[in-house]
Amino acid sequence: MTSIEEIHQEIPSTSNCLNDLVIDPTSDQKLHVIEWHHLNPWKFFPLLATGSMSIKFLVYPMDMVRSRLQLQEQNKLYRGMFHAFMHIGKTEGLRAFYRGFPVITPQIGAMFLYNTVYEGVRDVLHRNMGISSTSKVSALAGGTASVVEETCSVPMDIVAQYMMIYNRAEHFTSNNSRNKSVINFVKKDKLERKFLSYRIARAIYKLDGIRGFFRGLFASMLVYVPYCTAFWFAYYTSMGFLKDWWNWLLKDGHLNSVGRSDQATSEDRNFLFLQAISGGIAGSSAACLTNPFEIYRIRIQMHRTGYRETLKQVITTEGFRSLYIGLPPRIVSMGTFSFFYILVYEAVKKLSIKPEYRYLAVW
Image: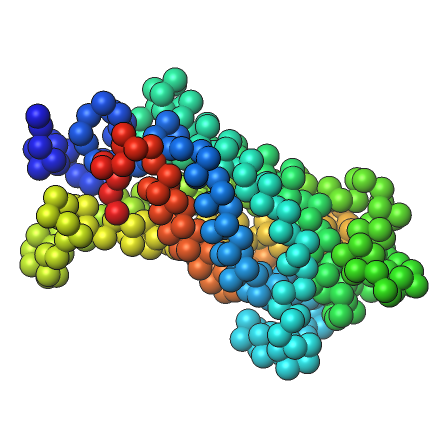
C-alpha cells in the first residue's frame, strides 16, 4: 500500500494539490478537500446551521454600522467606523446594534439552500464534468448558489435594513419624499404596540406590493454573485500558498515540529487553522472588490430609486470616492465572518464525514 509520505512526494506542490487534485475515495490519500459524497447530510446541515447563525450574531453589529455608514450622504452623522460604534452605543444603547437581527434568523433556510446548491454543483462539476481544479469548481459553485440564496434573503434584508436606521432615519434618507415614504408611513400607522418588523413589512407592502420586498434583487446579485465567486477562488488559492509557507517553516526548523498525532505528516498539521486564516483573507479580499456594488445595492433598496437614477445620484453628488464608503467595517465584518465561517464550515464537514472516510480527515 502506498504510504502518505510517498503520495506527498508525487505531488509537486501543495498549491497544485489543492487546486488540481481530484480525490479518489477508494485510496488512502488524506482528504484535504472533503466532497459532497463524503458527507452525512443529516449531521452536516444541523451543525452548520447552528454554527452559521452563531457567527451572524457575532458580526451583526458590524453589519449594522456598515449599513448606516453606506447610507449617510453629505450631512454625515458619523465620521468613521469607530465613531459610529461609540455614538450608537452612547445615544441608542447596546440593543441598537442588534436591531433587525430577529428578522434575518429565517435566513437559515436560505443558508440551507446555499450549501445544498454549492456542494451539489461542486460534486457535479468534479465528478460528472471532469473539472479537476478545486478553486475553479468552488468559484463556479459559489456564484451559482448565491443566486438562489439572494432570491430568498432579499425580502428579509430589506426589512432588517429599515429597522437598522429607523431611530435615525433623517440622517440616512435624502430629502426626496419618495426615499422617506416607508419610514413616514410607519410613523403615521398608529400601530406602536405592534412589532417594528411587522409595521415595516406592512408599509412596504402597502406602498409597493410584493415587488417592494424584492427591490434591488438584481443589484444584490451584482454584489453577491461576484463576491461568492471571488471568495471561493481566493480561499483555495490562498490556502495553497499558506500551506506551502507553513510547510517551509516546519521543514526549515523555524517552528517546532509538534503534530496532532503520530500518523500526521508535517503537511497535515494545523490544517484547520490554516483554512480559517485563508477564509479571512478571502472574505476581506472579496469585500474590497465588491464594495462599490454594495453601496449601489443598499442605496437602491433603501432610497427606493431606480438603477440609473441611483448611479447618477451617487456619482454626481458624492463622487466616485463614495463607492468605498463603509469599506473598513465591511472588510472587518466580512473578514471576521469568513474566518469563523470557514472554521465552523470545515470543522462541521470533518465531523459529518461518513465513517468509512473518517480516518482520512485532516485536522
